[in-house]
Length: 168
Image (cartoon, rainbow, N blue to C red; front, side):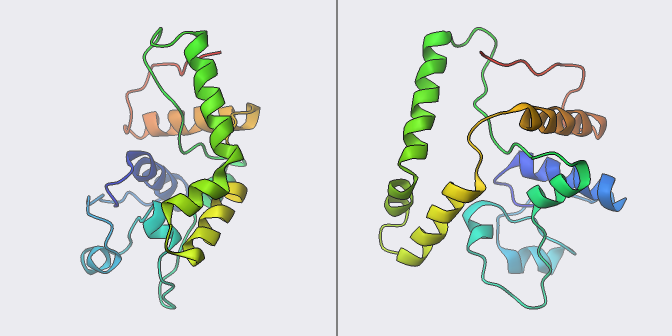
């Protein structure tokens, strides 16, 4: 499992257990597909390493978000801003929301800056930032987040018993 994201490792584990009835032995590794598959039957690759993975005809790829939605009927929330209770007040929340809005409005510029010398990757990144990422938490996203948290707690992947709390 790619060590870049504990959330994706937990999601993979939850889906393998619940959707496929498999309890994997997670082996943490750097995201090198050849090295991972030399050691294990499957590999978790995330982020740019997955987005720009060279297609190999004999490797079956699964999109974790699509599999989650197919299994639960809910969207998956990959990232949120998180903090301790009372770490932020309403003014700081507004600043984070403005930063989000400015970033969304400039997603093409973000892609160009991230891949300044690679127009092909810029195009993929622009599409990904524009079409694949949802930047707001609605009721369905909150249901998906709560369901994942519950499943992860039941699998012993997070400390259970705590309720998710949200800043207004």
